[in-house]
Image (cartoon, rainbow, N blue to C red; front, side, top):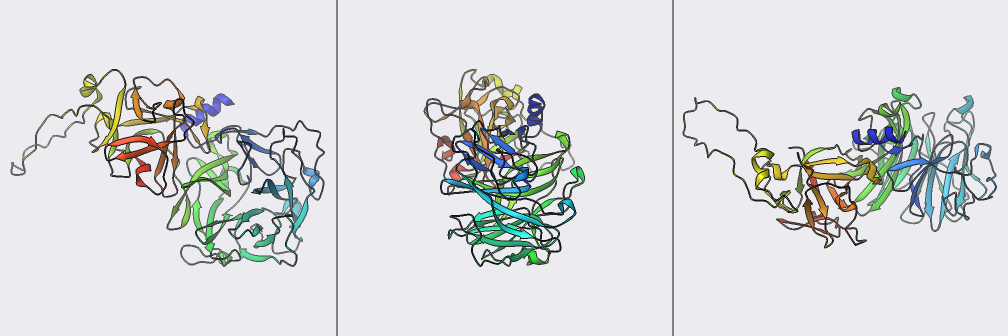
Length: 492
């Protein structure tokens, strides 16, 4: 299986590796330097680096299984039984919400949403122990809402909200006490959407966004799940989409649909990694390249006109690496080799043949390059060999949240971009797989990219590729507010 996943990773840079099989994943949580997510019908997944995911191991403690409604399905490595959990960190504890039934399971719509706490998500920790589950919402068989698919948000004012519901009726909102996880006394559910499920709210720049999963579920490659969004200035709504439709009337702007031989994206979760770097987690109902299994997926979040959309799945290939600062291209610091031919005067006979000019080739220029290390700079892009970089994942090097590490080499060679001990850039004649030659590529919330070495030799600094001047690339602290820190990849 590991070998198969490595092959898959080289073909699709945004397919999580390991055994990333899960349905209805919760928002990804970090705990003790590891990442965790939980799903329906079993335990969950964890990852050391955010790229390779496997089942959470069984605990080694003698902690008894948690008790409470719905816990007959419980596993110690799993936040309760039933379906579609979510998780949020509040202070130094983790609050888990889940559904014991609902969603038409067993032929009815009666269900419960429950919450419980844990000090840690690591089942190997001596502090691993769930509190007793508390019911915070329920539905009856004949009700116009199913108590399932919980989603949690702590707002900027410290108020805690939970949404729940499915396609069988309304999506509803209740307020919880962030100290106890209980429903606020006297709080009544508010209807906020229809025609979706797996809802969750997020907050950004004065807007509350309600994300829901639209379409059909649980039909493998035939599932039509897709993620939609509306927004409101208040958590109670109304949530309106980009063309003015209310989500109570079936509105919702598309965030992500089927793509790259994967169908049924659903169960959105947001992870803010750093300023300008946000990731969305979800499942695909069927990954055609992994046996049609339901798999965990992680993509960048790009904000366009204050709306969240799924970022690009980076495709290995050959690119111009373009600085946003000036539009100049990253290139080897070598002598410019002129192409044959001069300017064709405009006054010549227009009937003469117009043969195409041939691109300059690597063979035309490589003899003029040093065989040792060569520095890099930025300059006008002329689609020349010293400006064309082939970028491919290195499966055995692991990865980071949502992506593998890449090597960046001059097209047609093994000459690799590398970080130096003095936080500068160089190209070395041969790629060796050293950490200084491995790169992470994060699409930013504005659609541009951050480029970072896995390691600067002899340093623990987390620097990014920046333009210190129009022609001077270097490594320095990333600044989301500066175009010096941002890059793009042009498939020229």
